Length: 535
Image (cartoon, rainbow, N blue to C red; front, side, top):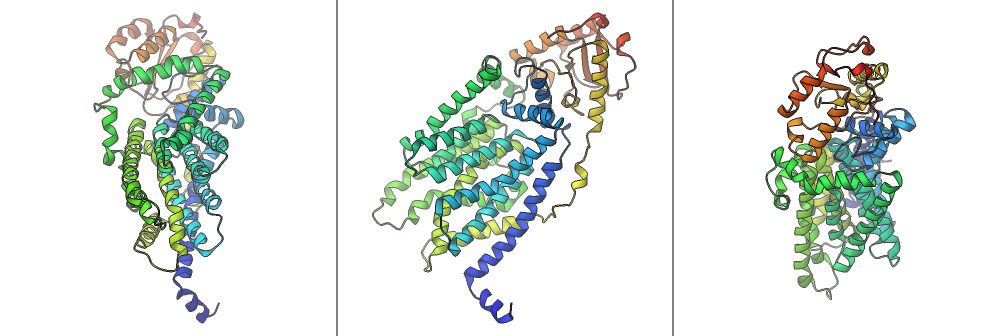
């Protein structure tokens, strides 16, 4: 390319914009590839929530029922994925690959939605697709940083983005059955991994719907269909009864008690106004991405003013739209608060961010395609600048950097699990009780499943205040031949006397030689050598 040709290309603003966005897309693509490779090669499943999911997944393979025979307060979706990975790959390899696919698919779901909706081939379309890719990478990096490493929210977020894709592409379709069927599958996929996606997907439907009828068609009916399909699937697997009588009963009747025990005093409906607290991780991860989301929340409600048809009742339609977007903000914040509002739980709001951007796409494409300026031309450079700066703010990481750190870094938890399995095998014990909630989460790797004591990472003092968990703990201790706990763990006063009178540190003859860290304590039921638990 000659210097004259290069200077001629640079002198054209649109060509220069495509060039700059292409360079940014290259940087964003490298970051995306690195994030996907990190997730695909991750084998560290012993120090986070992913250990809980593996423990329950192993229990499913052992023929046990979630919520009744082993309890963790999550929907069953992530347990099925963990069980499938353990069955198909003998470990976490498949789970890591699925996590990588979830993260990597987000930008391309958005690109597919834009291509199917606009169906244009002009230069403005190329610019729009580049912006869509950049924004999709920002969402993927947000999901990876917040809910990677086999966290349940990232899987639900992918289904949420697919839901936004469906509504964006098929909202004007005459085949309503296709819209309802596709939306139902997406809703089922999202809530199967986290119930609070019900609220964020409701916010997505509010963004795309323009009447109560369309809202019911896009969200109300699909939600009912999704719940029906979920109940049928649970019944097929034999999990519907414990899901309904134990898990759902706990969520509806006792979850509020549990939240108050851990310091959450504000009523749930009021927490929908905690905008700053609920979305606090956005500025921490990328302040310009947070500014971009704020700009979308400000611009999208004003989109009727960008309509060029003078026959449209702009002023009449603007007030209901503003009220609708206030409801969108409320539902989004409430969904994050209901999820727990920690960093990985804030990914529940990701489908709403995707929907806001998709809503803006037709207007952006029109502004890029028009040669003349309008009084709303400021929208175009503002969105482009915020996306560009947010991508530039993300540190450039080559795909191969740091991958050596993601081999087997949880050998310590595996070795503890192997010792516990050995004791259980030699003494012919089927199960055990784990009262250790911190440190190496060995129950991710034991072949024998622990008895249910409520959420595995919650302190006993908090669980004993909830009747459902208290009953689980008492019944499990009555059945248990072996208790595993950690030095320094605080036992609830009501359990101390029972454990001291019925359990002891002295190993029965069947246990043989046990080599465990000094921090791990095994308590055997007295005369446990002649006991075999059948459950």
